Each structure stands twice: as C-alpha cells, then as structure tokens.
Amino acid sequence: MASQNPLEFPYWNPFGSFTGADPLEWWRGGYEWLRCSARLQEMWLERFSAPSERETRRAARLSALLAHARAHSPYLARHWQGIPVDAPLQALPPTGKAALMAHFDDWVTDPTIHLRDVRRFVDDPARIGESWLGRFAVWTSSGTSGIPGIFIQDEEALAVYGALLSARLSSAPGADPQTLTLMPQRFALVAATGGHFAGLVWWERLRRRYPMLAAQMRVFSILAPLDEIRAGLAEWNPASIASYPTVLRQLADEQRAGRLRIAPHTLWSGGEMLSDTDRRFIEESFGCAVVEDYGASECLNIAHACRERRLHLHDNWVVLEPVDAQMRPVAPGEASHTVLVTNLANRVQPIVRYDLGDSVTIDPDPCPCGNPCPTMRVGGRADDMLEFRDSGGQCVRVLPLAIETVLEEQCSVPRFQLTQTAHDELHLRIDSEDALARLLAFERAHDALLRFLVNQGATAPIRLHLDEGTPETERASGKLRRIRAAR
Image (tube, rainbow, N blue to C red; front, side):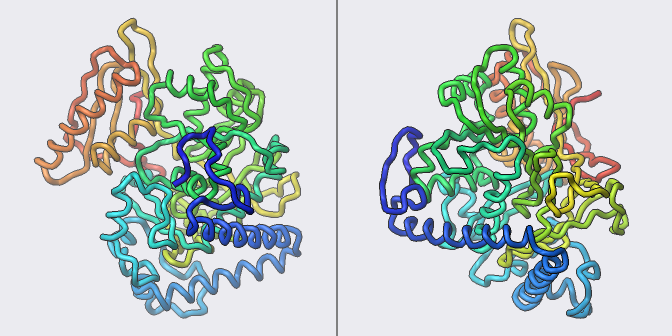
C-alpha cells in the first residue's frame, strides 16, 4: 500500500507517477493507464464525429452489452424472457436495487463472483481501494432507497471512468492549467470515510497504484469535528478540493468568517444536489469555480459541468431515460419522476434500465459551449443540515452525510429516517418488522449518535427518541430522505 504520509515520495520507477511500488501494482497501474489513455483518445475522436457516427457507436456498445447480459446473467435472461433479442432498449422491463441485490449471484456475469465473498471483502475497511480477486474494484452504497448495494467494476469499466474523469478537465469552468499539464499540485477529498464508498474507493485506488500521485493527495473525514477539518485543510492548502455541496457550503462559511484561509484553484462538487444559490456563494467565498459532477455508485460518471455550468450527459457511455411515475418517457424541459440509467461500460454487473430514483430534466436547447452531448438538471438527492447548540448556546451545524455514515456504518442501520423537531430533540425511525431488532438497533444508534454529536461540539443535552413509525418516502419522487429538519 502507498505511504500514508502525503509528503513522502516512497518509490521511483521509470514510469514516474504512473505505477505502484508493489511489482504487481506496478504492472496493473501501467496497464490501466494505457487502457485509460486509449479510451480517452477514443472519446475525443467521438466528440468531433458526425452525430450519426456517434449514435452508431453507442448503438453498437448497447447491443454488445445486452447480448453479453443475456448470455451470461441468468437473472437478466429470465427478466427479459419472451422479449425479442432485436427489441429496442425501451421494451425491456426496468430493474431496481432491491431485486438485483436479492439475485446478486445470478445477476453478475462472472460465475466466480459470489455475494458472500464480496461481503467479506467490503466488511474490512482496511481493504478500501484494494483490487478484489486482482481484477475488480468494489464499492458499496445504500443511496436514498435505504437498501444496501454492492457494485463491482471490471477493468474495462474502470478505464472508461478514468477517461471520462480526464476528459472533463479541459471543459470544466475555471479549468486549472496545472491539472491539464500534470504539474504537481495538492488535492483534498473531504468525504465520508470508514466504508467502501465509490468516491473513497476510487481515491484510494489511485493512492495504492500511483505513489507519486498519492504524495499529493489527502483525505479528510466529514466525521471529524469541523475544527479538525479546518485546521487540516489550512495546513495542507490544497489546489483542488472535492466534496459534497453541503460540505463546500460549510467550508465557504468558514472562509468568509476568516476561520479558514486557503486558496484553491478548483472545487469539485458531487453526491448531492448543488443549487445555483449555493454555487454562487461557494464560488464568491473562495474566488474560484465549482465544477459539478453527477454520478452514482451504479454508474460513476453520468454527467459533468462545462464552462457554461451546464451538466453534459456522457451519452456515448450512458443511456439516461427520464420517465414519469408510470415509466413513460417525459419530454425535454419536463422534470421526470425518476430516471432509468444504462451503463454501457460495465459488463460484469450489467446496469440496464436501472431505476436510479432521481428527478432529472433534459434541456431542450443546445449548450453554447459547443459540446454536442445533451445537458440536464438534477433535482433531489439533498438531505437537511441539522443545527444543535453547544454549552454556550452557539449554533453547531452537522452534516447530514456524516450522520448517515455513523448510523449506517457504525450502527449497521441501513434503512432509517432521523427527524429533528427541535435543537435538542431527535426522532429516529428504523425500518424493521422485528420489534426486538428495532430496539437493539436504536440502542446502538442512541449511544453512537450522541457520542458523535458531542464530538462535533453539540454539548447541550440532546434527546433521541425511537419513533415506532416506518421511514416515509417523498410523495413526488418516492425517495427516502434519511435526515430531515422539521419545518
């Protein structure tokens, strides 16, 4: 594993920052870089191709994915039984996380993959970012459905994701010239830690495989008190920070108040909805651009923002279908009830017409930036920031994702809903039909959550109650908002 000291350069080899210190990682890193470079070149050529040629390439990828899934995924073969092979994608019934996870071993296309083995792997936080079986990246997600998910990415999918991440750099608002020229600069990821989350796994994979790059990368946990995060960022002084909109907004507050003094060149935002108001506030606070990404554990790179600050769909590798509550397509300019995603890059765990649960709106007009890929707006995916009090009566704001991580990872409560009814009062709903299991889960959550809040500075007494009701999904979207502040 790469050194954990971000200022230490532990190894030098002919490929410089492109290979790992371990001989096997040295080979894997170099091979991955070559695959990614080939995909990146292919993407640039496609961008300037005629629309008909781009559509032909995408159709070929879709056809190959569906043929592979029919031949090697027993579950999808049954799910699509009776539907002609040459039927359009829209003729296939949608899929969802609950059903796919329930049939995991039949869903994957590699018979050597078994859910019990993958679960043992993700149960070990020391293996975050490690290759599983020497071939796969694995990450987990519960998402707003509250259903735990495990997602496996093969080498081809990882090469595509890497190329898409690289391709966005030149078109992003306020693109940093140092990034484009691969000059050394410091990166910071401020995120949930302790679990095999997609962004954290991707970050740790880079640190393991490319130690020269790892020397420029640090992870800051949102579970730490704000004072620690602020001090760490001030000492590290990164050129780029990647985090969630709620975290960036909190850091922007600190920057404006003079408690944080850093000068990043670029801020990367993802994982939650970024409002125009928050974008302007964050950009004005730091004096640099916020680059928005839209992705999910099921499909890491769905869209990215251009210089016009519009999200461009990666339609050469992703099929996105905005639909209404009856799964009928909605027109451009109309907000969808949910969206079905098909990931053309991953064949080991086919994501085909997967109900992602997000509301999206496809823009009807082309983007002035010149990128031919359609643009979109994303709604939802936002929980509430909770506010508490310290012993002196001062406000202590706590990130919703940090609370979710405590309850999900430390307390093993995957489906819950926490509602704040007052500064000193919380109500927790736990989805379980077993009364004893629910009570035991509440006892774990009670102790862990109150300890965490005190660690965050919320030292005024807080009452946490067990609510016997079940978590409520949003009526419009059907999604579960797990952290709520009562209005």
